[in-house]
Structures are given as structure tokens and as C-alpha cells.
Length: 74
Figure (cartoon, rainbow, N blue to C red):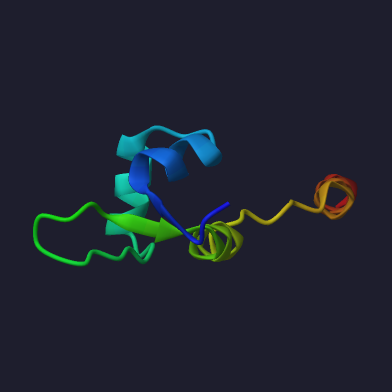
């Protein structure tokens, strides 16, 4: 796979629409463009880094249940 890919290819790669990928760009995903009329290009490793930074934390359900149970005992 090439290091630089067009936005529509990057969108397909991560199973989102090109519109969603453009929103990610607006939120800080780096893009590269060689000139004002050139295609926007994205690096795969930049997408991976962006998604890792935006990854939601998995809630600790046991902790949540224990807190609720403790409140109910009071």
C-alpha cells in the first residue's frame, strides 16, 4: 500500500464516508496537498494515530456496579 492515499481511498480503508473523513480533517487529521488544485492526500499512519488519540475509553463496568451497590447499601 502506498504511503500517501487520496481522501476517498482513505475513507474506504477505514469504512467511513469521505464526508466523515473530511470532518476528521477539520478536527485535526493531517492532510497533504502539493498545490492549490491538487488532491488532498492522507498518510495511513496519520489516520491510525488520529483514531488512537480519539479512541473511547472502555468503562469499568465492575467498578460502576460496585459504586451503585455501595450507594444502595447506605
